[in-house]
Length: 247
Length: 262
Ligand code: HEM
Ligand code: SF4
Ligand code: FES
Image (cartoon, rainbow over all chains, first blue to last red; front, side, top):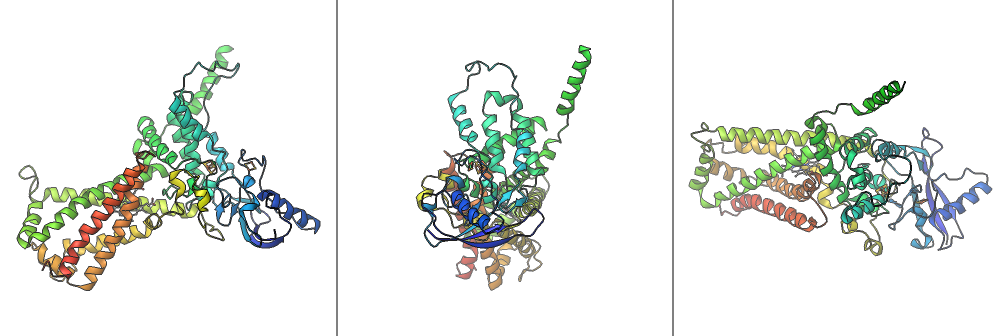
């Protein structure tokens, strides 16, 4: 396949960026989107140009490092991560727009790489449980009801990629934050911090400059892990409950 | 020595654990999640009022005597416990509080939302390929946010302006062409006998329908009442409420225009 790429190039956090146009040829349908970018970068390096910087790590859809807004959609046209998106989703001769996540809480570092440290700080503020260290506890010491285990698992699937923020017209981190609040909040192990967790994480989320939720649902549409929009509903309920108890 | 370590440990623990949180109201108004709760509650208060208001308006179809009598009765509610018109004034104070809370929260949250996403994408999202949308959970299957969702801010501004116009027209009678205190029937007919009176009213009521359609469902999510199992019921109720309010309110100017009410 031969493709025209329009890629966001930005030297550093302070520089102005622009969309630059590149032609790539010899792209196989079975290449992943990132392999296609590797091909572009090889040719850029050979011609002495600066390769396009983009984030990636596992390349198997589990780490959440890869990002990219492709043709206006976070992680591109399929419901998966960019590393698991394959070129068969495109056709020969296509023009593809590639941009970084856009949100003021995710400043661009270089080209397509953004700083997602805000997510780490939200997790640090309450996305943990207090557990004694040492020998692993007996697995059956704390009984977890099946529905709670299912809910926890559904929300634990979040890989922290930030597609929800990128897709949201308000740059809101509600889906990400609610995934962790609900994952830990429904488990008996997470019960001691149930109230402080949601209050602290929402406070941190706001302090990082993310927008609020207007329930447009764009986040849940973009999420490669299928975190449901009702996760936000559940966190809203948790927040008011915690504010009443702790306020 | 051990006591010393224990004290240090305790102090460290206290350091992290004794931060005092704001009051319940402070926690709500001070966060995006809580401020949205204030919007949802004030929105529901206005919504309940509008349902009653719309039903009351329908009395216009029973003639001037019934309608004016109903308006006069509104002033006597709660007597003799409440003095004349007290109930009306209590309702007005509650409504003004709701409108102000709702509008201030909307303004503050909207400013924040716009600041949080300063750069637009080069190409707007085309929506997911139908083939892939099948695999999305039910809620995320929507191509893009609906029209009602995308017009909440503009719709809200239209409603805010309309509320001011409406009070000047039929409460204070400042801009009413007939302006006869104590004769609401004649005043209503006079307003809807002007083309601008009809246009302003009908546009505002269409905006109201859209606002309620997303607003009711949205408020249920904000207040934590939504769930996958309840979603269909909530959406149906939102649509029914929106349709009922819009149709009910618009029936009055239409009746005047067609000469059914004169
Ligand atoms: C003063 C004029 C008004 C303004 C400026 C306004 C503005 C807004 C805005 C910006 C939203 C948030 C939209 C979103 O989250 O996407 C909203 C939500 C809402 N509005 Fe209004 N609105 C107004 C009047 C009304 C009226 C008259 C009603 C009564 C029917 C109402 C009921 C609601 C409800 C129920 C919500 C949902 C709250 C939530 O999302 O939790 N609004 N309004
Ligand atoms: S909620 Fe979904 S889109 Fe958001 S960070 Fe987690 S996995 Fe990514
Ligand atoms: S590179 Fe790890 S999820 Fe894409």
